[in-house]
Image (tube, rainbow, N blue to C red):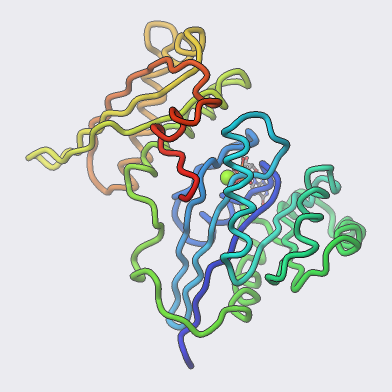
Length: 297
Ligand SMILES: Nc1nc2c(ncn2[C@@H]2O[C@H](COP(=O)(O)OP(=O)(O)OP(=O)(O)O)[C@@H](O)[C@H]2O)c(=O)[nH]1
Ligand SMILES: [Mg+2]
């Protein structure tokens, strides 16, 4: 049997479980997840390889109403992937009805030539009877190549989804070595893991105002990896929140991030965290570029 391969985009509104699905498929955490919408900001590839096929998943930022330059960047990143792939997985949260955001995306997909899958996620939260009317409402808007209910969190029916995707892959090369699970450098994933801990530990006023960059990452002679990271916020008050009383918050962020990063790198790390204020960074194109948001990445 010839080797089959191709790229598959996962799109949907914020918080439907796109990153959870990708991590579940590749069995490793490369994309960060949280219960806050707009967690993913950049496109990130997750590579799933078997003996006779390779699927490269593109996790994308949730598509949402524009609020800032960063928001525009995130929407363009998600919608821009549609023409580059063999199939599109339109992920929806089956535990919620079709909302305005879902309808907006469905309308964008109506004229897309690429096969579109309707993937109904979070079925662990619903009664099976609830699925049919939901599927009907989506089918009125888009003609789907396949319809697959799953639970990304529990992994239910994810194998069926993978089998269905494989049917749509053309003959093709193995793009990535079988032991490579993402296209992003370790530095990017480390910065994302730090950002995830902050998302989990802070309330609404902080999450969208932060960016994390790795300033330095080097292996010492004793094998310990020294990492120095900067957390950018927009206002002094947010700096105070992230540092916490006597540095308690920052210390806990560091402790939690260290565990995940040590798992990722497979070695002990020493993590140094700094917090800096960069006013209104989300609306400044140049600052966005400095922080690693590129139109073409
Ligand atoms: N019960 C249940 N929860 C899920 C499932 N999949 C994802 N979640 C939860 O939904 C929340 C959002 O998951 P993410 O994977 O971060 O969602 P996303 O679509 O990547 O979100 P953005 O990056 O913000 O667009 C997290 O709290 C997940 O644990 C599922 O199958 N069942
Ligand atoms: Mg995500």
